[in-house]
Length: 219
Image: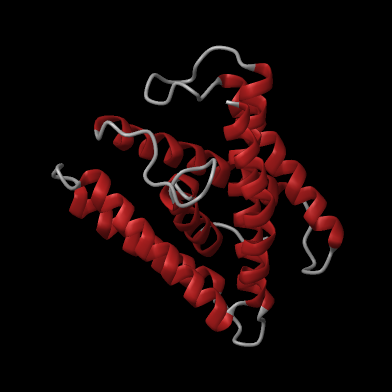
């Protein structure tokens, strides 16, 4: 257990800064990174669900989700505001990453009753952490003030929506792993499993983020 936690922490310390660097750089580097994650995710999903009828629905969903991720990163409503898509992408990524971290840390330390039988590691204390850390991380990000953001009511609601969708997405993928009788979708990331294990909430949260920002409110 301690070895797995150590691997998880060390790989996170490498992956999180590297991912944010790639996101900020954009262009060819980001497109290559996105294409790599997409292909590996499709492979992991197919290997997990190849004996089940829902495999094709998953491939279609993943393809749409990754397309939206691409559109979100390059979102530019005014054709002269490069930072609009970038700041929205960074905020969404922060919410997803710290939703996952918050759920893991609070669940491990405070434990408590399970949230659902689908994923035994999900607890009510983890849900609290999954809301608290994203709020804290975005608040800290707004203080950097590079992209002229503030934690107002719209941003607060946006964080709650995206974090909730991310948590639901995590449970949905856990359900499919459960009926496929596997623990992880792969072993490419030490301590975490496959890429799909790491982006399970993101593939649901990014479409929700894009739709929420585009059609409901902008911050």
